[in-house]
Amino acid sequence: GCFPELSAMQPRSVTKYDMVLLFQSLSGFLASGRIDIGQSARSLFKMAQAEQCRIVAVVGLFDKGKTFLINQLFGLNLPSGKLQTTKGLSFYWAEKERMLIVDSAGVQATVSHRHGESGVQPIVDAQTTESILFEMISRLAHYMIFVVNDLTWYEQKYVVMLQQKYMQNRELKELIVVHNMRSTE
Image (cartoon, rainbow, N blue to C red):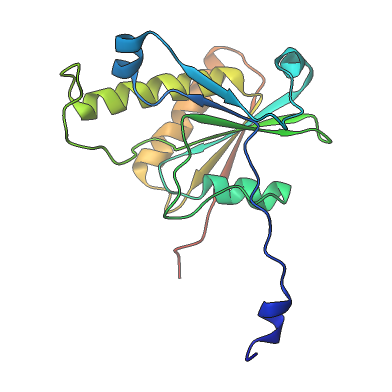
């Protein structure tokens, strides 16, 4: 063909998350009283091992390249890009490194303006849900990688808030800010 190097490339198989905690709406949780957790049948991760590993969370605003960064750092092919959205909290077990990698959709995701069955305003529900997930991640992780794009004041506020929280609680956690240069010229 016209592009022999492209035809010689093998399509990479898609990497699956080891576990997904489907917590996408606080009002949905309050109405149902349940959180669904799905674990891949092929996963080698055992919950009992969670205390014996390092937990690395990749966080940031919605659509800033968190999953892309995970793919680059760990040689994975997790679904990412404009047509993919990470669900709830998604976990990948890097067995060789003994790391549990936490991925999420991020904060300030798009919101449907249809009212839920509970009558809760969708934006308020999204804000409270994102706050709870972010708090959960920040408590769980040993290392936080905060992915930014343009380093807006909102992103700066989140970074400062995390740093202050760790200092107040005297927590020895690493906070790493990664600037994803994908849309800069």
